[in-house]
Image (cartoon, rainbow, N blue to C red; front, side):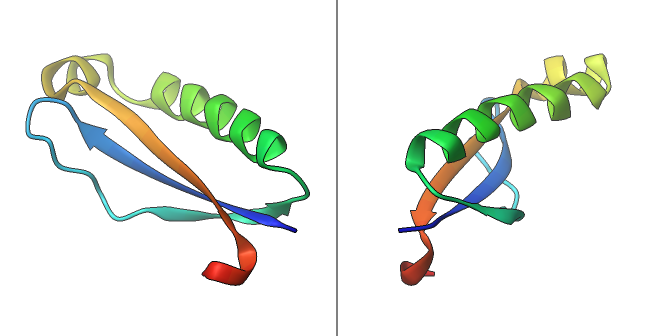
Length: 70
């Protein structure tokens, strides 16, 4: 079974999340998908402006869904 990674940026201040972005690669296992999700999330937050991340308390939310359910 292949997994598809979907990531969104969320605000812990407003409780809102942006529409998810589907990662272009599929993964053979849920674990591979989850590891890439965490690494990608960390890299994405590092590129964002500190003031914006802190003001809106931004973080990412991810899901690794079986490819056949999307």
